View 1: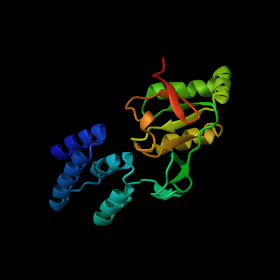
View 2: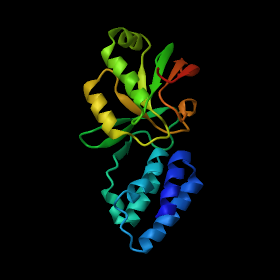
View 3: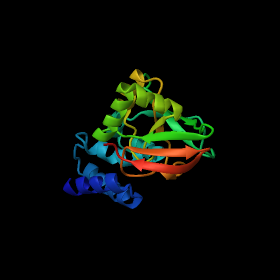
View 4: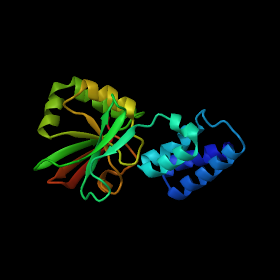
Length: 208
């Protein structure tokens, strides 16, 4: 169990597929020994796969180990398919606990992307400012603000549900994957990115 916990921590931090493969091997040994993995271990197994959007691998593991089916991951609806070329995001539908993949298009001219994530109080502070400061909110409107979660993190569905219900003007969406969103694939949040006609021209890290 200690080895699995260590690999889970490393897998979550590195998102290295070789580490994830080792994590799965140790998990298989634990299951072969009849260990009850429902208290956190199942979640730890699936979390890095969710961060990497490895939905097929998740489905295979859930078919192999029935207890993994009780982990409450959102259902995924891909409207674009594997051959899609461009940028896409996942829109969260709380009623069906679903992530729906849709095409993303930049506004003409300059556009501001704010990347935030759950568990980061600096992200929370930036979002609170957007809610409470009318002047900042107007600047965000003028900049065609889009709010995303990172392309390599688990979809924080509780945060998405709570924020999006109260802020329909600026719903948080989930960046689809690292391949489509290389420019914003950074470990720290919040980060502000300025794009012009779809090309990154500037970024600012952090929130005071």
